[in-house]
Image (cartoon, rainbow, N blue to C red):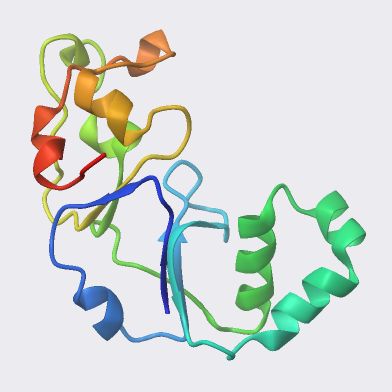
Length: 156
């Protein structure tokens, strides 16, 4: 099964996501690549292959909640300990705020673009596809010009 968050935009063929070898694939954290934690906006697993992870989560929920920052940190840790965790090729899942929006001050005059090799754009944090279309942001350091080209890939 390929899981996709609702706030992602597919910009290229996703067939390779089904062909990539690995038992459990997830996005590697862009901001802190030294961590094991993956971003669960796009992940793939075989249905029924990891019932132990869900059983542990249900049985030990309070301990897990106290130990891990969020569910994706728990999921990444559990599958890493089993030797099952793998990451998508870096270019495939691009962060809207880290990879598409030009760095300051270029973001003030250059519109966001799809990075080379990207297949899915991930809208994590406060900016969502409707905001990106219009160039709306709640953070001055993440200001971006409108990206009307997103309409080619995403419909409200």
